[in-house]
Each structure stands twice: as C-alpha cells, then as structure tokens.
Amino acid sequence: MRIAIRAGRALDAANFFLADVRDGLGPYLAIYLLTEQRWDEARIGMVMSIATIAGILAQTPAGALVDATRAKRVVMAAAALFIAVASLLLPLFPSFWPVAVSQGLAHAAGVVLPPAIAAISLGTVGHRRFTARIGRNETFNHAGNATAATIAGIAAYQFGPEVVFYLLAAMSVASIASILAIPEQAIDHELARGLDEAGQGRERPSGLGVLLTCRPLLIFALCVTLFHLSNAAMLPLVGQKLALQDKNIGTSLMSACITAAQIVMVPMAMLVGAKADRWGYKRFFLLALLILPVRGALYTLSDDRAWLVGVQLLDGIGAGIFGAIFPVIVADLMRNTGRFNVAQGAIITAQGIGAALSTTLAGVVVVKAGYSAAFLTLGAVAAVGGIVCALALPETGGPPGKRNGRRGQTAGLASGIAAE
Image 1: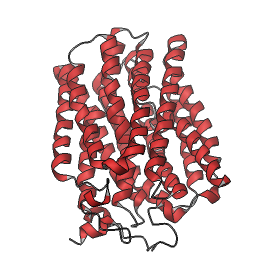
Image 2 (image 1 turned 60 degrees about the vertical axis):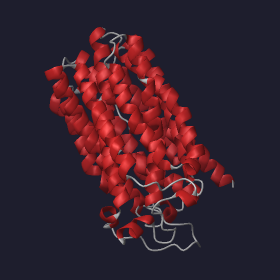
Image 3 (image 1 turned 120 degrees about the vertical axis):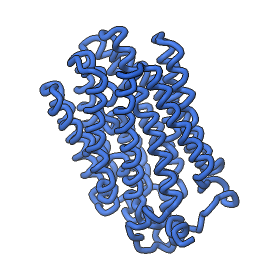
Image 4 (image 1 turned 135 degrees about the vertical axis):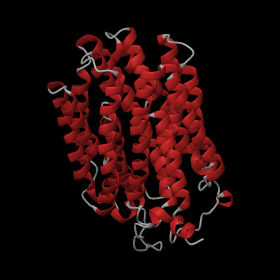
C-alpha cells in the first residue's frame, strides 16, 4: 500500500511538470519567430509542420517501445532531457533549418511521453481504476500547464519571449526527478501494455494486425485526425493576432490564453475521471469535437484582446475532455490485446498528421484570405469530425448493458470486431 501511495504521488508530480514538456514550445515558438525573427505566417506554419511530421514518424515506434520495454521510467527521463537541450539551443540557432531540425528531434523525443505516462498509470492501478487515474493525471497536467503559462507570461513581459525556452528546460529537469521517483516495483509491465491483471485470464499479446482490423479503432483514428486538423492551429493563430497588435506583450497575452484554457481543463478532466465510466465515452468525445466549430466562429467576431482570451476558454472544454478521454477509449478498445501503447502510438500518429496539416492549412489560408477565413475553415473540419463520430463510432464505455460491440475481457474488443 505504501508503494502504491508513493507511485500515485510521483505520478501526480510527473504529470504536473511534464505538462509544459510534452507539449513543447507550441504557440510560443510561433510568437518568437513572428516577432523576434520576423518570419511570415506561412514559413512559421511550415517549420512547425516539419517538426510535427518528425513526431509522426516516431510515434508508432515509440508506442511499440513502451509496450516492449521494462525501462519505461528511463526512456521517459531521457526524452525529457533531450527536450530540455533542444529548447536551450533554439535561441542560439534561430535560422530556418536549425529550428526545424531541433524542433523535429524534440518532437520525436516527446512523443514517447504520453503513451508512457498512460502505460505506467495502467500498470500501477489496473483497468478498474484507470479512468479515475487518467482524470487525475490530466488534472495535474492542466494545473502544471496553467502554472507554467502564468510564469511564462510574467517572465516574458519582464525579460522577453526567449524566457520560455529556459522555463521549458527547468520543467524538464523537474519532470525527470518526478519520473524517477515512481517506484519500479509498483509497475506491472504486462498490465501496462493492456493485458488483464495477473490471474484473470491473461493471454499472449495479439499481433500488430489488430490495429488494422479493429473497425472502431480506425473510426476513432479518423475522428482524432479531424479533431486535431481543426484544433492544432487555432491557438497559434490567436497568438499571432495578439502579437501583431502589440509584439511587446504578445507572449504574455498568449500565456493568458493558455492559462484561461488550462483552468477550465482541470474541472473537465475531473468530470471525465468521475463520470465517463457511467455516462459513456462517446458522448464526451463528441462534445469535444462540437466545441471547435463554435470556437472557430466566435474568433471571427472581434479582435479585442479580452474577447480572444475569453473565447479561448472553450478550448478548455474541448481539449480538457479530449486529453482525459483519449487513453480511456484506446485502453477500452485494446483491452487484453497487449497492444495498448502501440495503439496509442498509432492514434497519436493520426493526431500528429492532423496537427501537421492544420498549421500548414491555416498558414496558407491566412496568407490568401485572412485570419477569419482560417478560423472558419478549421471549424468546418471539426464539424465533419462530429458527424463521423455521431454516426459511425460505437459506444464502448458506460453501463455494461449499453455498450455496443464489447465482446468481453478475455480476448479484447479489437479481435472480436475483426472476427465479425
């Protein structure tokens, strides 16, 4: 019991400090390149897409590595250290290719963190308590993001936008200490890859073909792609609009946007953790999708700083729900296949494709038609995702009597769907 308590507290700390690390520089990089290096929006979108593509290529192998390795803590610590080094080097080499390469390598290292933290969580608490643990993870993650964004906003106002690079490095170091504080003996590595608890009919891991034969997983991958094709570019676009109004406070206003959203994400994550097992997973995910068209439309109504920051609160609902429900849905679909983490990697690959295309799409639309057209385009993409989710994605959570396609806990939903 004492080991379990230590593991839970260390996971809390790891999620808090990894919040800023696993998301990388994100919109702060866009502001820095726009205001300090005088890059145009299309060039910024391109370098961010290149970095995201590097993460895409590494994502599924990263998930397979997390499934296979028993050194999950060491792998996570090494990734966090690499991200710290990349963030410190970026201001020293701010031309196009050094930025693209450093951010590409940082993204490739960072993709191991989400599946690894979910795997360790599952390996320490088991399937029954996994939804609640993920809700707690996301609560600490958003609290960490809000704290880091607040510090970044205040520090950037005093010392300039480059301070965010050093803040990210400091958070990386703190996250390493938290990761290594998780007791190794608390992690059941077979359970961490999605197999059932010992003594409950554990089977050998399924073949990798399960990723292509599980129809609900493929539908979920499409919906996730559309979610991030819509969502990924919205905050950077808001940051660019704010920076163009006043470059001296652009980073601070971006921090206000992030902090506002993260504050809302905390209760959303808690709600998912507390209610998703009873209310069902699909309805939470559908709500996350449908928030995006509303948000995109509202951004076009005013360029007022307070309005833009206020609309950003809606990101707290959508992203807060998505971050908490994503690993829960994948774990449910991959139950007892032993491919939980590689499936996470595959879905996050789809997510990365959407995010990479999002920044490029938004940058091109802004250059050709303006910011309002870009926001409306991104919102329309999410509306399509909502239709696909509502009509095609089965419900796998909620009360047992209302679950569609759930075939039991001995061979996994994925292989059951493939056999139909």
